[in-house]
Image 1 (spheres, rainbow, N blue to C red):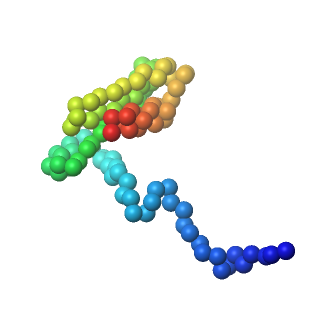
Image 2: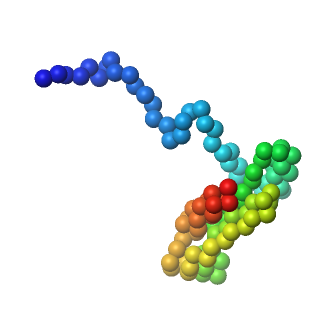
Length: 102
């Protein structure tokens, strides 16, 4: 029977994405004015693609949306009443809509 010497085995850290790949940068600004200023600053770059998302509830209804000003694409989904869905689920749906646009 062979025993393994675990102390001598190579330890390889796990990554959700390869360490050489840079994921998207996410910003959440404190005010609308800060968000507009950042948007204007980022869109000076030609390789910038901004997609804005939102999930929310109003008057007992839940929905989500994603908007890309550069490509002029918008998507939205009505997710039902607040007894059928949550704002948290709507926020995740907004991210899914953004990925469809990208």
